[in-house]
Image: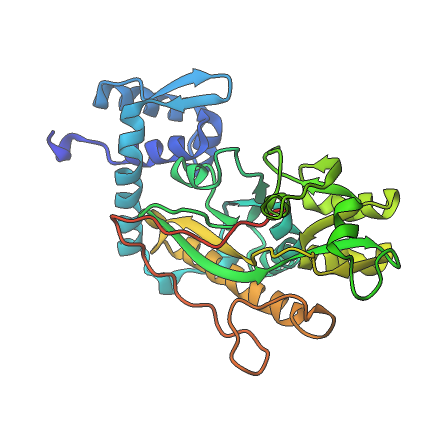
Length: 346
């Protein structure tokens, strides 16, 4: 193919179509009219001799050929942008775009209020879109351009993904105040209680059940919920017992008159990370967004890890109780997968 005969603006259109999976939204993303974007798609189909996108119940699905083009085209455009628009020229006050983040309800409860305040102040033209993770997880959403970044437990990552640890948390138990007292329940009393199980993907058990099974025990799960945020209300209303992240428990314990205790089984701590696709490493706006998330996390966890929040843990500690600056992410080894700490869940 003679590159001089190709309109490189078509690659910008292709990148937008891969991200939005919708002609109208893709046109809006890059400042074209809807007919102009439809014309660009027709020219792309002729250029690559492929349909590239086909209609489905969820919008427009990329063909195998489009998927093979997505990452190389996106990376090429990012490099051009980096060359033509140095990071020093970036001004968040002029950042007129959508920021799409997949978050767990746990990370939303901890960070969302502070993130909203920071972005409204520093980037008033930015539109913030929060999404739930797909059943398949957050990384396929990054691969497909559906989101810009994710906040959650990283799990296994491929070489093209990046993860920056944000904060650590632990699983604690909650019950109505006075039910078990300061020492918490015995293993026998814990198992005898009626429980709330939080299982975002509708699985039959959580990490607490697996630990109980190792002891030859089972508990009665009276209520199953898809999100942690409603569990404290169920505990307060129906005199149940639940296990959930400490930061959510502490945020709700006083207002709902709940007691917090250590579960009588060993449950691993977990780490919440910022996750993104490597193609966005050097893009100035994305870099600023990542740095801003990191700044907000440091402020939230520094307050949250002091005093009444001492049950929570900072990801790193400089020895005086204050979190150290977050480390730079280490690019993964291309031939290996990395495993993150055990995910949150009960």
